[in-house]
Image (cartoon, rainbow, N blue to C red; front, side):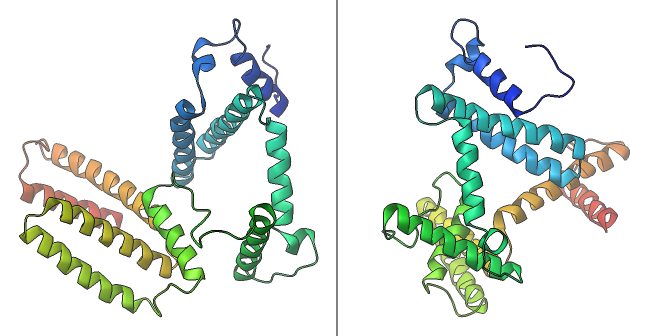
Length: 266
């Protein structure tokens, strides 16, 4: 395929077909299946988030293209197996977006984001009822492969919708103190298995605390990771500028450099 000045989605679909064509295609692409491609799909999604964090529009443009290519890749493999193709995917998501926005494409009214959220959830529930009857559990529909903090909040949100919820966020803090004491007990007893369980309880509880405050815990931790990386790289440079190396610096020197980085941020 020759390189045109402007390509459209049909060109990208054709590229994917050519890459997967036996004999004439790319040996690596031909060998792939849904499971082997998933790590790349996840990586591209996170690279989109990274480009947004950095505010780089050129990188965002590129990463969105890479993520789009992942959708076309999966759809091509499904088409080869006779399940569906990319045009089915586009049809389904278009129909779903129209269905879930009756306040835009129908007669319902929404004056706030909260109104939209209620309509969205009601439409989702109606779709599930039409497709599979009543759900077996209030927790149905939470994807198993989600990052753990995000999955925790989605499970908690599902449970809260049927009333399994503390009256207010102060109860979560009370429970947090209880869980911290249980962690202390597990540490004192040198019970490694119990320590892991208690750590899980603490993380789950903190995710719930975030949810009740309207904070996405996965995003909060991602931003914290970015902050830590930025500060630590600054710490390394600070120590280097003072004629030393981080591997030779004392903990006190590193703490002082860390605090200098915090002040620079402010």
